[in-house]
Length: 111
Length: 112
Figure (cartoon, rainbow over the protein chains, first blue to last red):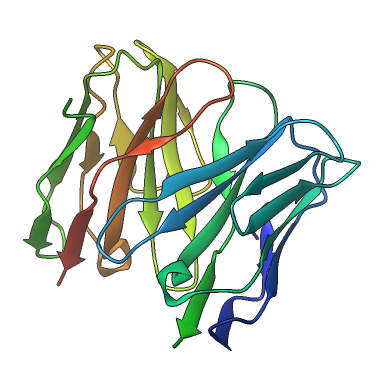
């Protein structure tokens, strides 16, 4: 059983649609990160959220950390084919400790 | 900058063979870790280290050993490979505290 549960596991949408990916846990995290991974490469950091209720925006991507610091969401507005990839959330239970990942959400945006 | 370097990139083993996956980073990061990635499983933590001489187990440590004799290097050893260890392995490092995890390019291991 993984500490972080992501949903949905797979998502296939048309260009221009909006989508939300969820990352949930029963544990409290000191920080939560979102990564994106392309085939054949290692994951690359998109954002880190630290404060409960925090919202961060990265162009068309909006990240939110739950008030209780147990969950997070990633919302993409007007998805583009270039957004296709594997999105992973990762949590750190205490600052400087190990980072554990969710199962990932495979997003495909069709032109 | 080289960042995190993993070798080899590809390896085929027979059941029962041993091997070491090498990982080196040139960013003077204190934290280093090994993950395995299987379809539908995301990244699962095998072992990690918060500094030279310190290692600890992650979620799936069985069948793997690590050591951290220097800040730069964090090798992962498979003492007796099993088909269940067929996977893509990623080494990653980060600085102390909350920060970005930098990944190597991955090592694809097949155990026959």
